[in-house]
Amino acid sequence: EEHISPDDILENKIQNHENLHLSTPPLTSSTENSSPIEDVLFWPKTPERKGKRNSELLPFVVSSKKWKALLQEKANKKAKLQRDKELRKKEREALNANKRKLKEIKQKERNIIKTNKKGSNEK
Image 1 (cartoon, rainbow, N blue to C red):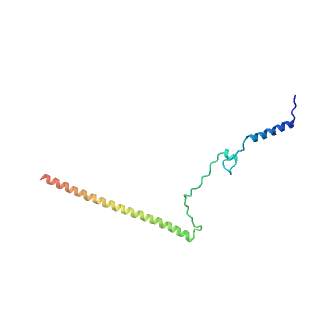
Image 2: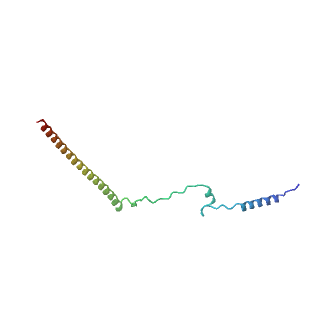
């Protein structure tokens, strides 16, 4: 019976370990900066801003002249939009009133023509 010493067992383990590393190629990551674990684990990418949102830079102090001018400008813009809206409404109502008057006049003319035809037919 052959006796195996602990040193032989240890040397055999070391040899097997070295052979294992020589036979398997080292893991290479898909990107240069990532670690091998990032190739295995999936982590969604953080979405990048598209830069479509335009933010308005506001003055810092509420009592500043720029702030008051900004508020005044907003109020003027809102009032102008309201005036334009009212003006369009009045124009639309005037057109509708003219259409109604024309329709009534045409209707009266038709009624007059109908009554004239009836009167001439009866004679």
